[in-house]
Amino acid sequence: MILINLWSLLLKKSKLYRYRLLFKIFFWLAVLVSYIAAVLPQEMAPHIGSLNDKAHHVLAFIVLGLLLRLSYRINYWYALLFLVGYGVFIELSQLWIATNRYADINDVGADTIGSFIGLKLYKYLKRVI
Image (tube, rainbow, N blue to C red):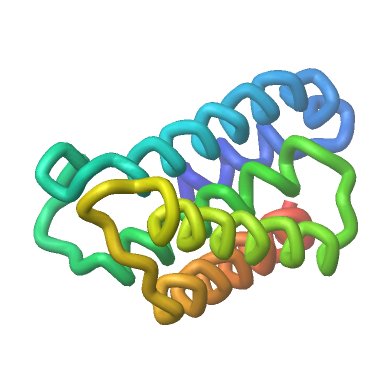
């Protein structure tokens, strides 16, 4: 309940514009951190608990999807296309640029699922609030 009240304070239309710049900063910071974590060699990459690789992808793209919609007035389908494209870009970077990293099509699937959840979460929060 407290979390819903916090979101209602942040997402009210009059206040949303006030925080839009902050959401943009968080979004681009999340993009930067997720890309660096994706291309770092495996032994240098951060480990987050005991979650597997696909769970990391889903969680990262839930956050990215939510922050993207909070930051920009972007159509749902364009946002989904952007995030899936970013997931493909990460995998291509792992294939061609990163050392000791391997591209996996299943990671793109996990990214797509996370993007979908994050974008739907935004729609839900907007409707609730």
